[in-house]
Length: 181
Length: 86
Image 1 (cartoon, rainbow over the protein chains, first blue to last red):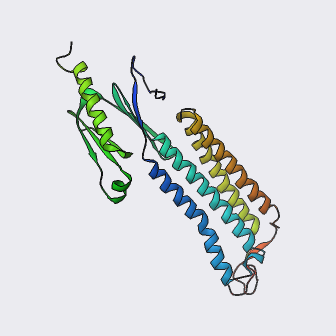
Image 2 (image 1 turned 90 degrees about the vertical axis):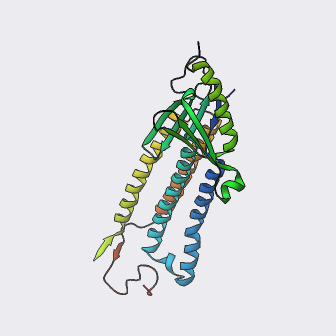
Image 3 (image 1 turned 180 degrees about the vertical axis):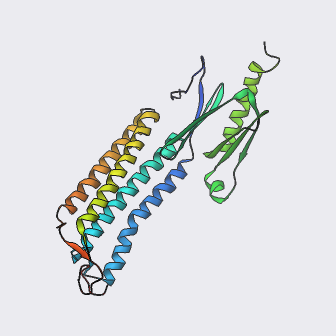
């Protein structure tokens, strides 16, 4: 059984799927952090080969040490926050609704929900070479009436998710629809 | 004109202070909203260990430096950067 603390859980509500962005997105940020970490070593190697006495200076050594320390701290935080952004950005599909939880930066977090019986149209999109190869993409969920659209961005297997939502929405409409008793 | 080296250390400490605030906010998010489980526990643990290592190594390097020296600018031949090519 999928475990997640549902915001405003309804009686009998069950989580069908917990969706996060594709892990490839997180891997990309991890690779970027590794490259950024190695960058000062490369720059340092080039600069020291031009100015071999640079690290012997009374001022240059402390400034380089301070800069490298600050830089590494920044990258470490960037890496941790990339994980938080990935892990806390989540879409929950239950047998009653879709919940969109978004972590936006350090100081912003939004939670939105959509009842399954309100869904009118579900579209999946797999566009671009990397999305095609690694099989991740977007799913657009359109509701009736108001111009409201849920977008599941960069999620793995978008077609499968679209099928699940359509199936659940149809089942839910039978229960909550205009002819239900 | 001479800029005391300790000024750069104070700037660095200010940066570390702001960085610590952001770290605390990040930790708050993961603990408050991250659904306490193995993944969040391991990630938080690794992050704290990593930051302790970075801060410790930084302290080890920075504690050996003589911060009473000043950076002299607008004056030729100070050899402050270990080279006269600057």
